[in-house]
Image (tube, rainbow, N blue to C red; front, side, top):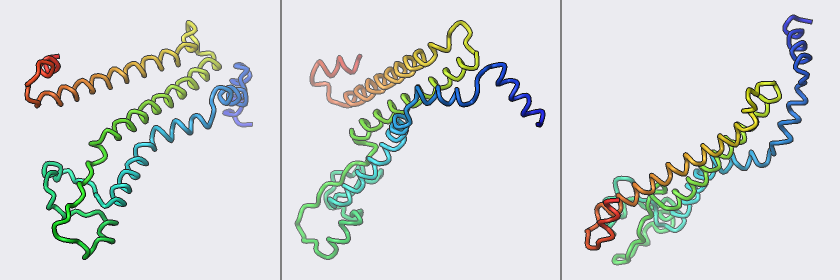
Length: 197
Protein backbone atom coordinates (compact mmCIF):
# COMPACT_ATOMS: atom_id res chain seq x y z
CA UNK A 1 0.00 0.00 0.00
CA UNK A 2 1.16 3.48 -0.68
CA UNK A 3 1.67 6.05 2.05
CA UNK A 4 -1.31 8.16 0.90
CA UNK A 5 -3.68 5.20 1.13
CA UNK A 6 -2.41 4.37 4.60
CA UNK A 7 -2.88 7.97 5.76
CA UNK A 8 -6.41 8.11 4.36
CA UNK A 9 -7.28 4.77 5.97
CA UNK A 10 -5.80 5.92 9.30
CA UNK A 11 -7.77 9.16 9.15
CA UNK A 12 -10.99 7.27 8.44
CA UNK A 13 -10.35 4.90 11.32
CA UNK A 14 -9.66 7.79 13.68
CA UNK A 15 -12.82 9.62 12.62
CA UNK A 16 -14.84 6.45 12.45
CA UNK A 17 -16.48 7.91 9.35
CA UNK A 18 -16.44 5.79 6.20
CA UNK A 19 -17.40 7.38 2.90
CA UNK A 20 -20.56 5.28 2.70
CA UNK A 21 -21.82 6.74 5.99
CA UNK A 22 -21.43 10.28 4.68
CA UNK A 23 -23.19 9.43 1.41
CA UNK A 24 -26.03 7.75 3.26
CA UNK A 25 -26.48 10.74 5.57
CA UNK A 26 -26.49 13.15 2.62
CA UNK A 27 -28.97 11.06 0.63
CA UNK A 28 -31.21 10.85 3.72
CA UNK A 29 -31.63 14.62 3.90
CA UNK A 30 -31.49 15.46 0.18
CA UNK A 31 -34.04 14.37 -2.37
CA UNK A 32 -32.55 14.32 -5.88
CA UNK A 33 -35.89 15.18 -7.47
CA UNK A 34 -36.17 18.26 -5.26
CA UNK A 35 -32.67 19.40 -6.23
CA UNK A 36 -33.40 18.79 -9.92
CA UNK A 37 -36.64 20.77 -9.63
CA UNK A 38 -34.90 23.71 -7.92
CA UNK A 39 -32.13 23.72 -10.53
CA UNK A 40 -34.54 23.45 -13.47
CA UNK A 41 -36.78 26.24 -12.22
CA UNK A 42 -33.90 28.43 -11.10
CA UNK A 43 -31.83 28.32 -14.26
CA UNK A 44 -34.28 27.12 -16.89
CA UNK A 45 -37.61 28.88 -16.31
CA UNK A 46 -36.63 32.31 -17.61
CA UNK A 47 -35.02 31.06 -20.88
CA UNK A 48 -37.89 28.63 -21.53
CA UNK A 49 -40.49 31.35 -20.97
CA UNK A 50 -38.55 33.74 -23.20
CA UNK A 51 -38.51 31.15 -26.00
CA UNK A 52 -42.26 30.55 -25.58
CA UNK A 53 -42.88 34.33 -25.64
CA UNK A 54 -40.86 34.70 -28.85
CA UNK A 55 -42.65 31.73 -30.42
CA UNK A 56 -46.04 33.23 -29.51
CA UNK A 57 -44.99 36.55 -31.07
CA UNK A 58 -43.93 34.77 -34.26
CA UNK A 59 -46.99 32.53 -34.52
CA UNK A 60 -49.44 35.40 -34.02
CA UNK A 61 -47.53 37.49 -36.56
CA UNK A 62 -47.04 40.38 -34.19
CA UNK A 63 -43.29 40.24 -33.77
CA UNK A 64 -41.30 41.78 -30.98
CA UNK A 65 -40.20 45.40 -30.85
CA UNK A 66 -36.47 45.98 -31.07
CA UNK A 67 -34.76 48.17 -28.48
CA UNK A 68 -34.52 51.11 -30.93
CA UNK A 69 -38.14 50.71 -32.01
CA UNK A 70 -39.57 51.03 -28.50
CA UNK A 71 -39.58 54.83 -28.81
CA UNK A 72 -41.43 54.65 -32.14
CA UNK A 73 -44.01 52.10 -30.94
CA UNK A 74 -46.90 54.35 -31.95
CA UNK A 75 -46.12 54.06 -35.69
CA UNK A 76 -48.48 51.60 -37.37
CA UNK A 77 -46.78 52.10 -40.76
CA UNK A 78 -43.54 50.44 -39.69
CA UNK A 79 -43.65 47.04 -41.40
CA UNK A 80 -39.93 46.46 -41.92
CA UNK A 81 -39.52 44.03 -39.01
CA UNK A 82 -42.13 41.37 -39.68
CA UNK A 83 -41.95 38.11 -37.82
CA UNK A 84 -40.36 35.21 -39.69
CA UNK A 85 -43.46 33.03 -39.66
CA UNK A 86 -45.78 35.90 -40.49
CA UNK A 87 -43.52 36.87 -43.40
CA UNK A 88 -43.77 33.36 -44.84
CA UNK A 89 -47.56 33.32 -44.89
CA UNK A 90 -48.29 36.97 -45.63
CA UNK A 91 -45.82 37.62 -48.42
CA UNK A 92 -47.55 39.40 -51.30
CA UNK A 93 -51.00 39.23 -49.69
CA UNK A 94 -50.90 42.55 -47.92
CA UNK A 95 -53.91 44.72 -48.59
CA UNK A 96 -53.51 48.47 -48.42
CA UNK A 97 -55.45 50.11 -45.63
CA UNK A 98 -55.51 47.03 -43.35
CA UNK A 99 -54.37 47.92 -39.88
CA UNK A 100 -51.25 46.02 -38.79
CA UNK A 101 -51.17 44.23 -35.45
CA UNK A 102 -49.21 46.01 -32.73
CA UNK A 103 -45.84 44.52 -31.99
CA UNK A 104 -45.15 43.00 -28.59
CA UNK A 105 -42.75 44.49 -26.06
CA UNK A 106 -39.36 42.83 -25.57
CA UNK A 107 -39.59 39.98 -23.06
CA UNK A 108 -37.46 41.70 -20.41
CA UNK A 109 -39.81 44.71 -20.44
CA UNK A 110 -42.92 42.73 -19.56
CA UNK A 111 -44.56 41.87 -16.27
CA UNK A 112 -44.31 38.18 -17.20
CA UNK A 113 -40.52 38.43 -17.08
CA UNK A 114 -40.66 39.98 -13.61
CA UNK A 115 -42.88 37.17 -12.29
CA UNK A 116 -40.82 34.39 -13.85
CA UNK A 117 -37.54 36.01 -12.76
CA UNK A 118 -38.74 36.24 -9.15
CA UNK A 119 -39.74 32.56 -9.15
CA UNK A 120 -36.34 31.64 -10.60
CA UNK A 121 -34.45 33.71 -8.03
CA UNK A 122 -36.40 32.14 -5.13
CA UNK A 123 -35.63 28.70 -6.53
CA UNK A 124 -31.91 29.51 -6.79
CA UNK A 125 -31.92 30.58 -3.14
CA UNK A 126 -33.66 27.34 -2.15
CA UNK A 127 -31.01 25.39 -4.08
CA UNK A 128 -28.23 27.24 -2.24
CA UNK A 129 -29.93 26.58 1.12
CA UNK A 130 -29.89 22.84 0.42
CA UNK A 131 -26.19 23.02 -0.57
CA UNK A 132 -25.36 24.86 2.69
CA UNK A 133 -27.38 22.27 4.62
CA UNK A 134 -25.37 19.44 3.06
CA UNK A 135 -22.07 21.23 3.78
CA UNK A 136 -23.12 21.77 7.42
CA UNK A 137 -24.05 18.09 7.76
CA UNK A 138 -20.69 16.98 6.39
CA UNK A 139 -18.92 19.43 8.70
CA UNK A 140 -20.85 18.06 11.70
CA UNK A 141 -20.02 14.50 10.73
CA UNK A 142 -16.32 15.36 10.40
CA UNK A 143 -16.34 16.85 13.87
CA UNK A 144 -16.23 20.55 12.97
CA UNK A 145 -18.98 21.77 15.26
CA UNK A 146 -17.62 24.45 17.57
CA UNK A 147 -20.30 25.63 19.94
CA UNK A 148 -22.93 23.53 18.11
CA UNK A 149 -23.01 26.16 15.35
CA UNK A 150 -23.19 23.68 12.47
CA UNK A 151 -26.67 22.57 13.49
CA UNK A 152 -27.94 26.15 13.05
CA UNK A 153 -25.99 27.18 9.94
CA UNK A 154 -28.58 26.20 7.34
CA UNK A 155 -31.46 27.79 9.29
CA UNK A 156 -29.50 31.05 9.76
CA UNK A 157 -28.40 31.08 6.11
CA UNK A 158 -31.93 30.52 4.81
CA UNK A 159 -33.36 33.31 6.96
CA UNK A 160 -30.63 35.77 5.96
CA UNK A 161 -30.79 34.83 2.26
CA UNK A 162 -34.58 35.04 1.91
CA UNK A 163 -34.87 38.19 4.03
CA UNK A 164 -32.10 39.94 2.10
CA UNK A 165 -33.67 38.92 -1.20
CA UNK A 166 -37.11 40.21 -0.16
CA UNK A 167 -35.64 43.52 1.04
CA UNK A 168 -33.87 43.99 -2.30
CA UNK A 169 -37.04 43.14 -4.24
CA UNK A 170 -39.13 45.58 -2.19
CA UNK A 171 -36.58 48.37 -2.65
CA UNK A 172 -36.57 47.78 -6.42
CA UNK A 173 -40.38 47.85 -6.41
CA UNK A 174 -40.34 51.19 -4.59
CA UNK A 175 -37.89 52.60 -7.15
CA UNK A 176 -40.07 51.34 -10.00
CA UNK A 177 -43.21 52.91 -8.52
CA UNK A 178 -41.38 56.18 -7.86
CA UNK A 179 -40.15 56.26 -11.48
CA UNK A 180 -43.64 55.50 -12.72
CA UNK A 181 -45.19 58.44 -10.90
CA UNK A 182 -42.23 60.81 -11.15
CA UNK A 183 -43.08 61.72 -14.73
CA UNK A 184 -46.85 61.80 -14.22
CA UNK A 185 -48.63 65.13 -14.10
CA UNK A 186 -49.19 65.88 -10.39
CA UNK A 187 -52.93 66.49 -10.83
CA UNK A 188 -53.79 64.61 -7.70
CA UNK A 189 -52.39 64.93 -4.20
CA UNK A 190 -51.76 61.16 -3.93
CA UNK A 191 -49.28 61.30 -6.85
CA UNK A 192 -47.35 64.04 -5.11
CA UNK A 193 -47.33 62.23 -1.77
CA UNK A 194 -46.23 58.98 -3.41
CA UNK A 195 -43.44 60.79 -5.23
CA UNK A 196 -42.23 62.40 -1.98
CA UNK A 197 -42.27 59.06 -0.17
